[in-house]
Length: 297
Image (cartoon, rainbow, N blue to C red; front, side):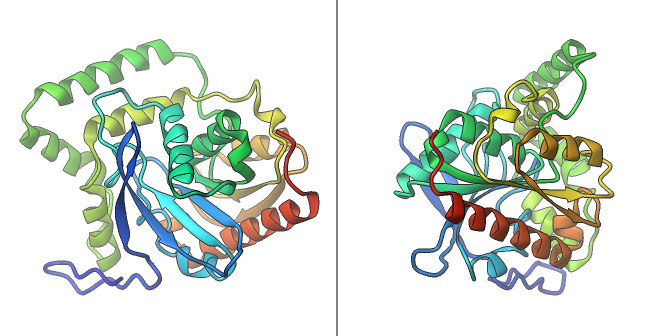
């Protein structure tokens, strides 16, 4: 797939599979991408980060991953072309969407691969639907993102902003979205393509998702994870600090750590470097799954 952007040179995305809409019974219509691998290969379920989608977060990874794995990715609620709902964004709903996706595609078990916000979604998928998860790959993420101090004030601010986005004209939301979600990308071919992807996001959901991620805290149960796990640790990350990523790895017995020299946005800014680390982590977890057999969860 090779998108061509008006007014810019074409940005080539070799290996990025086309997406399709998929109805999740009782939940809504989402958007998925599939990259079939060798027959009988394990399945990776890719869960993207906040304000990204299944294209922007993983565009460089599909081609290498599908050499060894069947790959499925989803756009989360309000992100990209994911489910649109009037309900407040909840990470738990995203985990249940992921489970519904696997069920709809008749995939019994998968290795859940989560990046940033996708990390908590992968963790919750294991906790809420353990029989579906045979391994975890957690990238640039944590079991807790911020301290509880001040959370009540933040909740009130986000609730007010979320309500405002429901009441103001759509043109106002579009202008705010351009300033908040789109303008952070440059005007190179890659940056212009990223801007187009960012424009697909729903502003209200982005605000609510940001709060839900900031409030997430799995520290009281993360050590109970009992499936093979690898942590891809971004060593120059200023968004999810490296020590929080290392704490996550230390909390999960037997987890491996694959360090990659990059910031939080390495999946987009240094995609080749990230893809190598991601493939190594997925291969490590897959090897552990084969050697240990199914979890008893």
